[in-house]
Amino acid sequence: MKKENKKINRLIILAHPSKDSFTWKIAKNIQEKYPDAFTMDLYDERWRQSFLEFHDVKKDWPCDEKIKKIQEKISWANELIFVYPVWWYSQPAILKNFIDINFSNGFAFKYSEKGTPQGLLKKKNARVFMTADSPRLIIWFYLISMRLIFAISTLKFCGLKIKNFTIFSDMVKKRNDSDREKMLKKVLGILIK
Image (cartoon, rainbow, N blue to C red; front, top):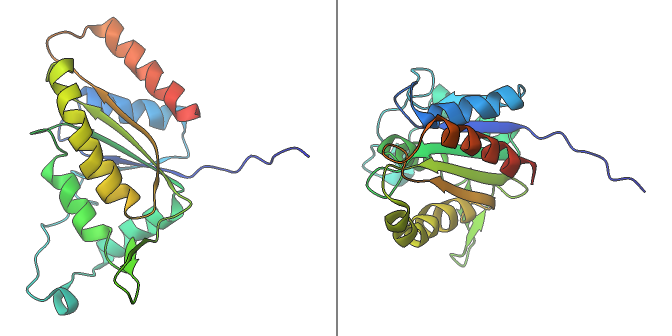
């Protein structure tokens, strides 16, 4: 019996302020290859959110129309593609804030009566593409902690299956246009797997 191809709803979550950046080129390249994908630029006014603020987590957790729209897009997608630069060996604050607000208890995870966490975004894949100016050796050294914190402790905690965690280092000093074209092709190759 032939396996039926399931349509993949891709949500590209882009966290870079410069539209001239290679990070943006990665997102744009994915969007061009998959025109049905939806790109959510976290710096765009439609998706930008104030930083999370509350006094009592049970009473003051924000729930506005923007959060509802973002959570609808996350629910719609069966593949979340995070595209961002590495800043201070982590994701930009705007992406961390996006996760803090939108991957909330009751939407992305919940706790059982025994206090065990359960991911609610199961049957969804996560892909991560990062750019960094740091040399490959330094990035390699920090990659384990970056993967542990974002991929495993955040995304996998919410039930997402990590399909790739890819970083392109040495972006400023050692990359030329030919290298960057190869990297863009590599991104599209990774997405087919």
